[in-house]
Length: 108
Length: 116
Image (cartoon, rainbow over all chains, first blue to last red; front, top):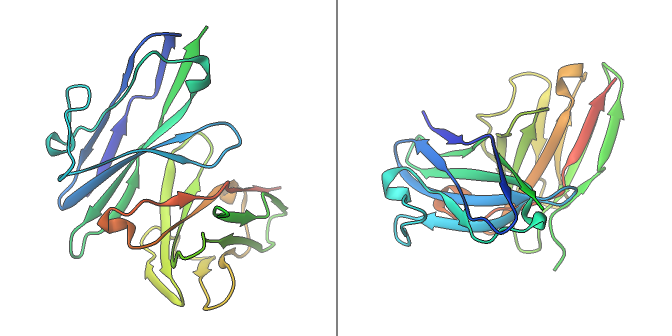
């Protein structure tokens, strides 16, 4: 079965860099999306990683079943919940699985 | 280009009543997905539909829940005889092609269902 794990909460000061991890288990061909949820706003796409466009984000990538997102010089306005979504294409086992989200809080 | 529309945004139902949640996908999108977010939890996949077809309902509770996406009009998620445990945020998303193949989903603002 597929599972997606994310760090629950991260608190950092304004101006810092932060890495939010997304690790997964699955069989099949993966695509990983990162979405951000600001209060009272729909989920917005931040990043899409496939096996073809895989990069080394913050020391990890989709091929290693770890697709982090890195934010540099964060601002208070970056405070939000960040979700990782795993899409698996595999005959008989196509799945859409969200992580539980990382709540990022930026302190002024 | 209007985004994914959901209505109502807030819905209050008493136990035993029916809840109908509507989702209008983005223009040109024929693939619709419903997700549920229980309090303090992440989003959980419920059902994937294309026009007039249910493609994957593996995340739908076996009883009381149904979904449709007719040829004309919005997609409807129906919950019959609601119970307190159905209180949650229900999100709809649409995509131009199968999300399983890596196509981006566009999300609506959600419907907050409260069962009293």
